[in-house]
Image 1 (tube, helix red, strand yellow):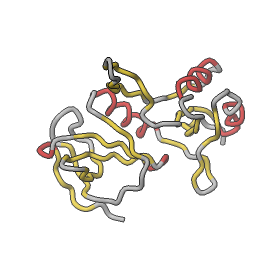
Image 2 (tube, one colour):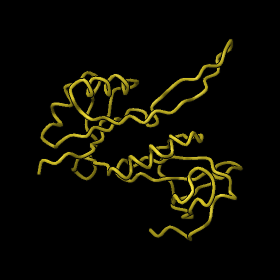
Image 3 (cartoon, helix red, strand yellow):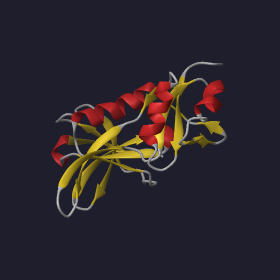
Length: 170
């Protein structure tokens, strides 16, 4: 099978934008989720754009063109799980894009997170989305698990907008 799929590429540190640009120049469809962050220096504040997932770029290609994609400077390897190349479904990338486009404060977290409550968002920009919730400090966070790359997105959502759907089954 030689169908187009979204593969997960790992890049050299701080090379995500360059790798994405070079892959696009080579005719590949690339998705690099970017978030804005306010950086504070001693003399000023500045908005900077940074990749949501450090070191990751999503490339839509076929399995037999993976080697060609790795020839781009800054490309390191394609992510594998259980001996298979990791792929991501369109719906998962659309979920990431939808969250970023709302402008809510987002951070990514690659750590292993224990399953907690499954929730549906019942108000606000992310209404009708479901995910797992964890607590962090005194705030409630809405966690969307993106299983194919073992990354999690933590989004701050007021508790009043969350409705419990029960425990997540293991």
